[in-house]
Image (cartoon, rainbow, N blue to C red; front, side, top):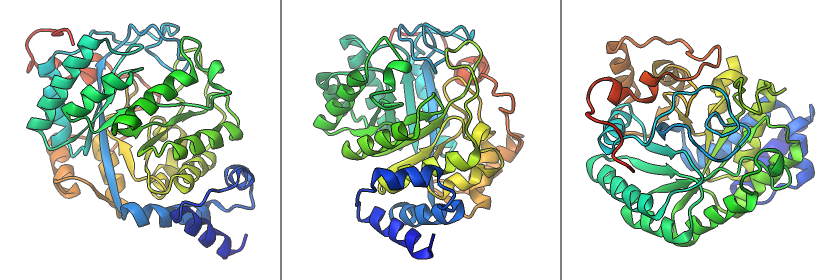
Length: 374
């Protein structure tokens, strides 16, 4: 395709003009759309809104296992037999200590994830107090993922200072029954709409590689656009033995990068995060994801390890990007060197986190006691 095609693609995205489904399909699969030129077009849009900054996010797996839902991709689902390290809700002091660790590691956003269908009214109140405490102690953005929540619950969390609510759509409405049977796509949409109605920023994304087709991916991207979602994590399925979805999906780096580009072009001003599975599926082309995406996770994911923190920071630096933090990349890399961190990838075998990695504060002996009943 002519160079003008890619320039027009970027221009239309910046102007928030909708891209027809037929062209979206070409972006995902047509050899006529050259990957490097597509990446450059997506980068022009990314640079318009975010410059060369990368936002770092850290997940706190605040409660592991015991979930009554059967999401086929999840190691915490009732249908999973992966043998994860389970524990009840972490004590407030442990969660606060990990918030401090996240801030000191250069994270712009601290993401707390609680297993389960959704929080009770009493847990909503406790979460609100926790959010207030975190916001009062650390200059860090807070995102919460706690399952299905109604408008009243989100309103309480907003008043407490919650910056974002995460609830991933994961796939299209049509494909959703193939992914989960204990709740519906509409249930997830209701939670997102409740957050939007009370003015909490939305974080919602998808998982690529769950047997969906290109049309499903396009539908999710356009639905998130209609919802004006602020943050879109693009995950790639991590196949763990014991999950319903345990087979490695047939996706390659070229396809993964095209998906990220599509989500950038359809959601030009959204924060696009290259999330779980980036190391496994992008392989040697991982750094290229930073041209359409402007954020990523460090310290791994919920139960899966990721690349070492120092390697991720060095990748960002080597590509000429900066980070959105009050600490420089150089300072953070020096800190990792002092800690003896290597530049290796830790998840070559797609290993799950052990208890020391899931609960660094508790296992370091900094936190007395167990759960305080959040």
